[in-house]
Picture 1 (cartoon, one colour):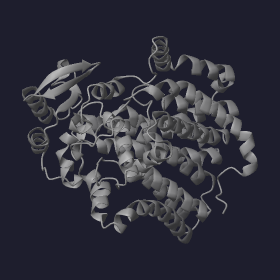
Picture 2 (cartoon, rainbow, N blue to C red):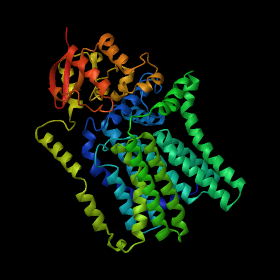
Picture 3 (cartoon, rainbow, N blue to C red):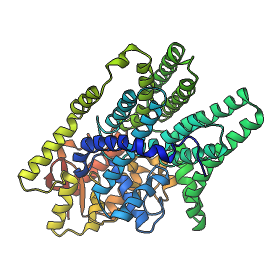
Picture 4 (cartoon, rainbow, N blue to C red):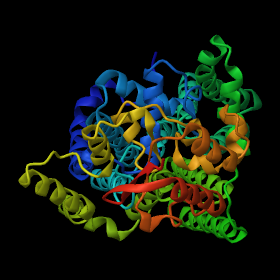
Length: 498
């Protein structure tokens, strides 16, 4: 079966060296973070969900998080093949980022020069690896890994129904790792059908939309089959469909207005650049429209969410980079793009990586293991003091569950912040109907012997700033029923009072 739009086999050798260069660049930037315990709460949660699958449980049965199931199967696959290995998880994440960067390179090479295309690929690696807490493997990395190739194939060959079916499969995979990608996928589908209807006929518009939709729905349906076979379809429906609809994080009207303003600005700037540089070049024209629609779709999803965390921008950067490179290619500034400039960019931007390399070097000099931070030190402390791992609740650094082979005492705390998102409780499959009720259950019924939380100086000012009332209830109970036993880094280990 030939999927048009993908490079033929004979092109592989010519492009392989570019991928290797991109992979080396990604490794140099991301390698020192392979040994971190706790880059982001989300990554730790994905690892825990993946481990539960390896242990024989479907997603959402034993543990629960507000993400689609394919994301957790990705982590489960790595754990199944390589065991409990941070190196394996982060190396494969690095490969995924490099592959996405390669597709960006291939896309840009079709419409510009090799140097500009390589600059675009390098910029993608930089923006997907630095600035904030994105050095781990995030759901955005994986969703973009599926989405960018789908966009490329849709651009290169939208007349072949097999290709459209494959695009649908990829879009479905993207959505089943990060649901907000349904917005750009929907805009691309609408554009495809309208474009076919305008330039060809209604039959081709219908068939194109059908094959695209069929591929997308097939991917989604496949994720539901294990639940159908085990009479747990209601779990899939509640967790994958209803919970994201019900979840509406607190956000001000000002926040949504600001995000809406950025969308309007993006549309305006895109139109100006289109009229000035791209409208007369048919090859660029179609790609530009697809890129802008994807960008608008992602931005609309941010408006719907009412917030923009730093790692959300991973889904924005590739589209901005392609637009920037198209603009650059159409201006006189393209003459300044050289391999020397790209090399300098790679040298001066990864300051965070240099700091982390320094940390690793210091640990080597001191004779310590390269694995560092509280997520490793706390389980080591519990092991040395012979604490039963099943008597510990991690409010912070919950990757400790994985390292200690511990069961999570509260399903609502698979991702610690879910404890305060009581709108999701009806879909988690737990008895508690409110955050307060679940908090009291943890302290009065579960009664963990130890709780790992923030340093006492940071109590009442934790990350849960969106849930001040609920988190303050938790902190007050922690202070009244537990005493601080030890501080490790920024973490406090609290032991239950008699």
